[in-house]
Length: 482
Figure 1: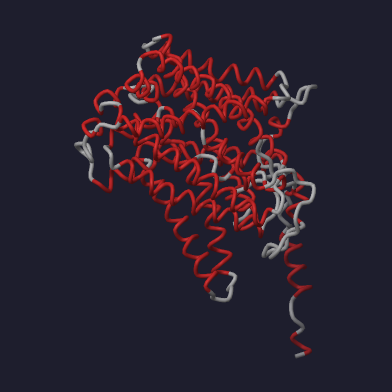
Figure 2: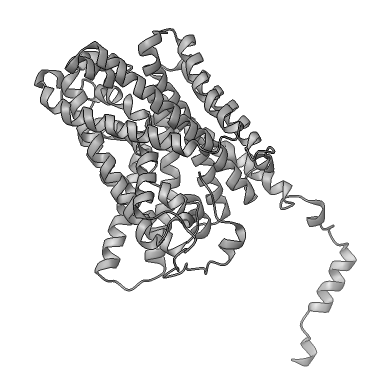
């Protein structure tokens, strides 16, 4: 669940941020729970399709995986540092609002909202691949229908006010992680060098391949910011937010790297390029056909759990920002059972439009949506990490070994965010920029509703010429007294 600190909470924050915020004794998440939250958020359904997308760049995409892992660790470290100076939940949105102002914070929140919408659509597309292991609906209309069903069912569950989805999430997260770990470790004994394919595929330079693959890989790391987003619920935040982000990212990186190597080495490259269920194909190649069905069933279950959680996030993000008067107030409307029916309904409609748009025109729907998500994720990362760089340099902190280390990490995190924008490609940058700056219209509308642009109370009639002359005479200096 994504929340933000209230305006009153932010007003209590000193301009430079507190040096050593006190622990939140009412918080419920210790280090193990916060780390589990990060792991559960990072590991979604996308990883189940990601190896097939990475294969088009060649095995050099494993290098991209390592680079993105280091970048994700840097971002997690920076957010951990910022959480000690800017307490409260909200993550990149709150950091941007505190350090850069309201409009950059709005762009961060708007961009992140696009991220969760596109991310949910991408998860549903990956989920369709494993559902089709059983149904074999190969036409685009059929796949689009399944993807829409994949986002509708979790929305209905959230509308029903299901209170104990946490238990479901815990079960499916454990199933995902154990299955990935099993495939990763056991598959190492079935690797064949001939399956790996070329190091760099035709038409790609090594730098271009790393950048493009890295932009795709970032989708698998969406969630490194989770501990920072729920900072107010984490005990000893100045210690645990940074550590939970680092530990959770490292745990996922280990599983991601090993599982990707296993898929590359057990599924022939030509077949992997066309696969819609690479983990199932890997299990079939290792143990026979029955295991492919088992893996696909687990992936379908995993997808349902992930889609339920992302449906919640798609409602909580605009709801939280609307409470800060930066999104339209319609997003705050709730039903009697507490369900955010307006935010859920609006988000569902936008996800369906996004799914239909991509199935109608994209050759690789998953990659198209993932690259869009990469761009819109990089923007909050860029704004958030820039706040840390501003705080370190502009505030004139005394140079020390710790200072130098923090500056290096912050610079790398900012550069990493820029690199992700570059790697997402011209098409994603074009369409994503249009979506992000379409939010300016929403921002102006919200400001107008707040009476800050052109409200009648703010309009003052131009004074008459005589009044101007009299005012100038009254305020003119007394030259005789000089």
